[in-house]
Image (tube, rainbow, N blue to C red):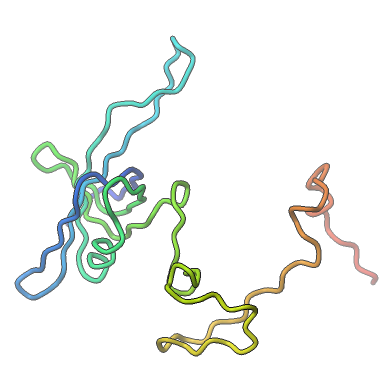
Amino acid sequence: MSGETAAVIRGRVYGTMQLRHTERGTPAARFTVVQVPREYDRTRGQWCDGQPVPIICTVTGPLARHVAECLTDAVHVIATGNLALRENLLHLDSAQVGVDLAHHVAYIDDTLPAVLAGRTPSPRATAPEPARSPVPHRPAAAAAPATDWWQSPPRTSWDSSTRPVPTGR
């Protein structure tokens, strides 16, 4: 379609999630995100909440199942998609939806702590845990730095880390 406006919205889920299926069995989810803009009030000299803007978001396919399973009322989200004005309401046909990590902690299957997954935490496992599903091979994580970043003294400037290192040529 022409005339669509790509947009990124950030706000809170409001109300309940609606999950339905089309005649062909494709899942479709619909939910409302309320975006509250922050405005600077010069007379008071402080930031305050503006008028809330409700946006009706629609997602289809596998994303709809994920959204319906993960999102609930009052969860902060970031969504991207095509924004349109229909019947004096803003609608976002979402391409991507995610939890706003500025407000929440999110875990994926690979990072879910053992206690939350219902497993007993094991002391430093010597053998890797067998794969639960066929996942492509991932490169090993980078080794931890030799010194603890939190314990190191603060830098006086970034020059020492951004200056080119002289070579012995």
